[in-house]
Image 1 (cartoon, one colour):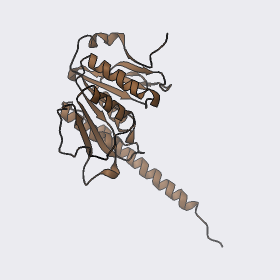
Image 2 (cartoon, helix red, strand yellow):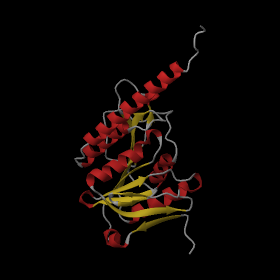
Image 3 (cartoon, one colour):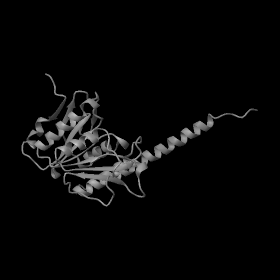
Image 4 (cartoon, one colour):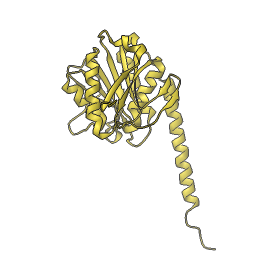
Length: 245
């Protein structure tokens, strides 16, 4: 059987969930700057105990899988939390460049076909653009209903990677979409930035997601990074030039 470049596979036991159109809200992100999108979506799934309802298969998807509490973890996973008409697309890997547009188009079309009405996307913004105590920047398109006191994305700042492709496709398809970009270090695994996204999404959707575990994890990551930095500096000093006797 010849597979399409991108295929959305809903498990048999959940197909009835999508036979009737519902006003679904989508939450998604990618492992880009700070890994924010993937950390945040995985954490929301865990705390809500959302059910995995399907997978997205792509022609060039990475070949990995792992066992999680909910079952098999795969590169691109779709979860549902029916109490809030919430779909969560967890991207554990970056889609390959040749299929990113197809991925975005196929998913957005499917999302609209099942009644999807709005989306919230997570990313990270380089902290060098941070002004004073800002926690994030945001952008709302297609009459998106949300607004914040924090500043919006301004001219000259770019959204990049598959998040930009998803955002563009949702804009073209007239899907109201909010993008939240907590400040982060681009090369750092940053659960602290994910906390900012999770707290804000929990607030606007009424999810009551407790972020304490993620805050604690962020603290442990920071402590581990500090310990590693100190060890490397100590090793560097020990390997420095020795005085002649």
